Figure (cartoon, rainbow, N blue to C red):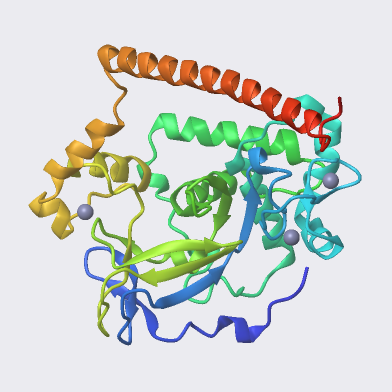
Length: 339
Ligand SMILES: [Zn+2]
Ligand SMILES: [Zn+2]
Ligand SMILES: [Zn+2]
């Protein structure tokens, strides 16, 4: 794996890590950013393509295209070309022969696959990487003291799966260190989505994880392949804290805070959470996402049946029309059919 030199540690321009009152560490702007400006970009520290997208996207660069070449050994990883395949080998080798050996029984979760890659990356890369200019993976919050028994049990299941599926190619830290690592991944991992918000994979973006949460964020994170781009969605002045949202903002305040408490162990005190000004509008949107009532389903089925019937009739007319044209062409000696 290529070594990332000392220059990688230079912090991105226009921002700094600082101590945010009541929130711990955070990210602060040192200059003005307009709406739409790229605030900073962060390459993934490590990442993994989700199983369902294998064959649609390159396992290394996440490019979507037809005719990707598959790994000759496992036939389950796909690449743009030999360069992508070679570059991915340090990570793919953790899974290649194991996928062949386990066959249908290969089913580690995405979190387990991602964590295996973090352990492999930490073994080969001692220096701070391009992804850790402001926050290193080792500094991630784990919130170990706040985990209940259910969460601890889930982590133990993940540790067991890690040993089961990856033991041939990885040497592990002890159980206590693995517990912390999984807890860190749970709080700091990202899911990569495409433009249509379909899930593509999971990744670690340490510098992006430095940002604190707000339900009225001033930036959003989008993805270009395996690169995270942080863009301003509100005017940001020099000295302002840079906030992203950790959760889906279409939910009302109570639901948002349940989710934040469950996954990230804090309650939000942003303007949106204190005023609850948009809750009524968000409840309306939620209603639209609820399953439709039986009468609505009946109406939809009736409508769909009518449409199908119309298509059938149209298809029938189309066949008659084709037949007429063919007869006409044949009679006129300009036959284009195969009769
Ligand atoms: Zn590629
Ligand atoms: Zn393979
Ligand atoms: Zn909030």
